[in-house]
Length: 397
Ligand code: SF4
Ligand code: SF4
Image (cartoon, rainbow, N blue to C red; front, side, top):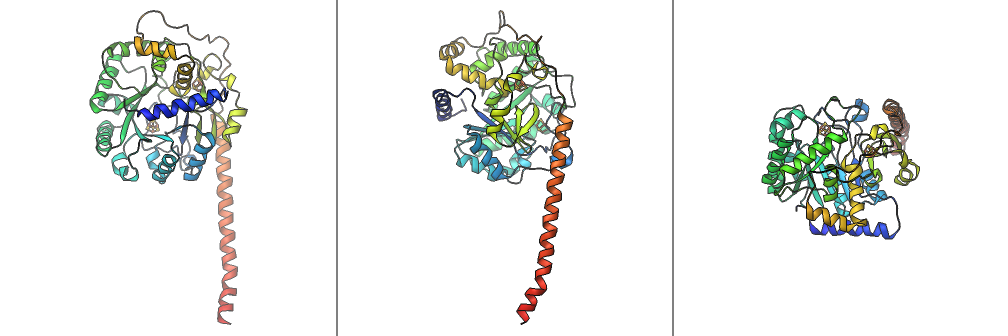
């Protein structure tokens, strides 16, 4: 395993502590998005469709550290946008590592080789390189030729410098199981761990045709895992989450386990859905109507099996029922036979489309901030101008 033993121990003890404290909802991984700007435009991406005024915004290093302190999760994943575009990314990561947070820096790797000097290898730092499949598949997914080769070259360079590197793959329905299996063989040859998640059906993604529904997700992952029997693919997931992907667990999503903080604030209810923002983490936990989200409760959650909602559920299930987790570890992922019953969708509430109004609200705030900054600057200049003759006069006297 690429995950150091002490990381598992530290996260395990964090989970046990939350249980002992009797907390019903607590964060496991902070999803920190310090910017939305990216240097790619993938067809399945729902994160970058914003006006320039929003894409140009950045969270400061201090805001990133404050978010980590406020939330208290033992792990921080930094997706984006592309975090390596952020001018303070080295400083942000150093500050998080100094706080003993496990940091997973997610990157498309276009800038990784060039920026490796910004970082130091540490058991607390992992690069998680976006790689959706083998060369042709990946280059098509990111809509640019040559990206796969650059990512693989960057992975090798980072590993040679002593960094731990994983890859993260988003899976869509145009990816045959056999090809996914070959991709996983390739990651084993590269010596990297893998995290995989079915693509969430972002309403703003350019390609709306290739998102997987839950039935297809389970069937696809069953086929993939069947190809993997006897192989040593190094997944960065719990066995129970993989078993869930293969349709053998009927988990409900626990979005508070991976709360998202971005340039707008704390995002309700999760990293995938932006249906409102709060200023503080406490407010997010206390004012989100958690019971109104999740598969079977809300139309936009109907097809979701993403790790950011269900990996926390799997982690909690392993803690509450270690025998079940041990049994899955012994028997392996079940790829045949009946699946766990699917969640009933008949009572889910209809989707609400709040994206445009949220963006307009944020744009107004940005414009107000900019107008205030310009007025402050003008006032300072005016004050300096007024002070200048008096100063020169007093010097002359
Ligand atoms: S690399 Fe990631 S953030 Fe950038 S466009 Fe692709 S999916 Fe979106
Ligand atoms: S099911 Fe959970 S993780 Fe998925 S979109 Fe809904 S709230 Fe978010």
